[in-house]
Image (cartoon, rainbow, N blue to C red; front, side, top):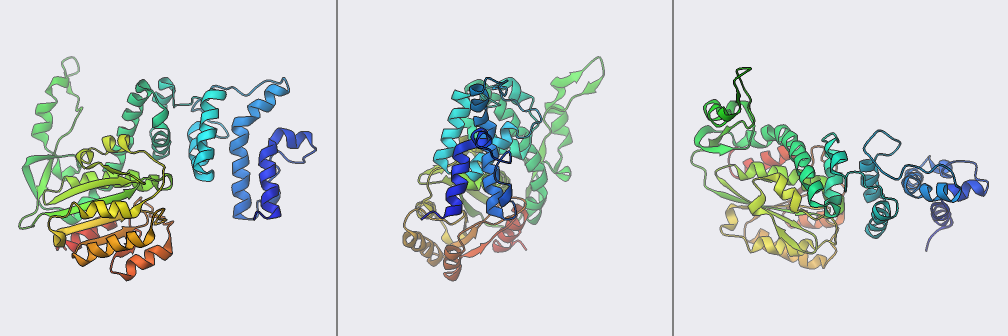
Length: 390
């Protein structure tokens, strides 16, 4: 049953700003009376998102100057990236698809989805990366090429930020035989960097332009190889976890004594292990959205076991299971009985803001799984402790 207040709020959304104004409404949005509570604020934000799109229709019907239908990334009340991110957060998936379809086809608000020039002018940021992740399935190849460049810039920043806290617990002697993507000053290989970049020497200025720096990997003696299986929920609400999981998996992948598997899942399984060394390629293959079958992912992980006692399964999800919860618990119990170390993370971003099904998490914890919310650095410290490095 829908209460009277919710029904009223829904009707305000349906009427829209223009019709409310014609009906004698006293405010632009009609939701100010509800600003004192969180629900009211969310309804007001929904109204602004719909107005950003559908007020164009009102302007046309009144024969007034229409809002420019060609979206861009300039400063405005709501930018195209912010609009896409907010729509995904505040509306159901079916509604999001309809809004995005109307924006692109009915009002031609292409923003950066179909305009490579606009996207190329955008400032790389995690917010922009989230927007690209949510709309890349709508991009043509030219725009995807530009998007890939932007993703690589954002990922490079994340790698630089996360490399030290993630790799620090495992740091050992330099391994001069192996290259590494971890850009840590103490690992810098000056000789290889100069040799590989000699083609960029400018004779006029007598300067060597470093297009690609090179770094040593590092060794850790007397450590038996461990296997880490990262299972990450790729439903829309887990986008931050997907991004940081891809970066963290890439860092783990470069540790010589750890074999890393990266698995994305919704109701299907996508094994991204072959791409995990490059988080950009990983993110380009992730498809956000869909249902959630956590049990299926855990069962897939069980098929990758070789030495269960030297295996860590990291399950990253909000634990809102869409399939049979009892089957999920059964698969997890079997992992633990085989002496697999199971850690269930509610978040894997730099802020570790958890939003998860606590009831299911408690059941997992009661059977022996480690449950919590960790930053990538905290996760690395936990893994290092389990493999007896600390």
